[in-house]
Image 1 (cartoon, rainbow, N blue to C red):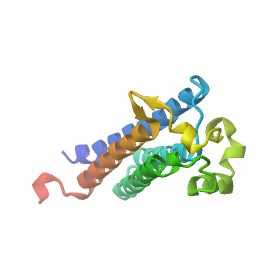
Image 2 (cartoon, helix red, strand yellow; image 1 turned 90 degrees about the vertical axis):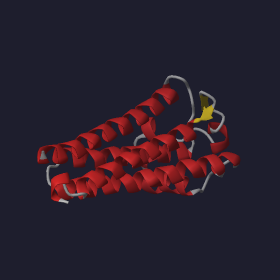
Image 3 (cartoon, rainbow, N blue to C red; image 1 turned 180 degrees about the vertical axis):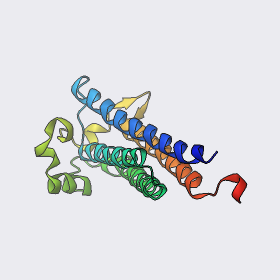
Image 4 (cartoon, rainbow, N blue to C red; image 1 turned 90 degrees about the horizontal axis):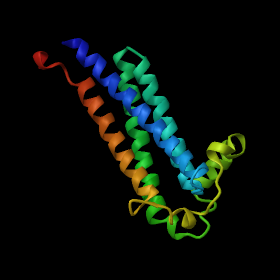
Length: 170
């Protein structure tokens, strides 16, 4: 029975990594196939999804319980940051015609991501322009925010299952 308690959280982390990478893949298809131009906050959320994927992948491949806990904690914190970024994009940045010099814009400039990997991280729209793109009537940042919420819930469940003692030992 203890084997389930060690393998299940790692399996959930593997799924989280796959979902996060898939979100970035969907964003790239939207950009490069359907010509939906990303703003700084769109790109910043890609970075957060990739960081989540990396943290979840580390938790998946590592067997020690402490690494699983650290990984799930990192995933939870990153997902909450992603929720904050999506809400900020929707409520503040989407109303600004430039959204230049916001945190996302400064982060991308400071890290050099935009110039080093333009296919993945190049900003080609303002936040107001990017807000016009919709999927099933909702802006993309709303979908992104909902996915961050689901990832945060998965990480919280992993933490709950990993930190709680098995049922027979309570």
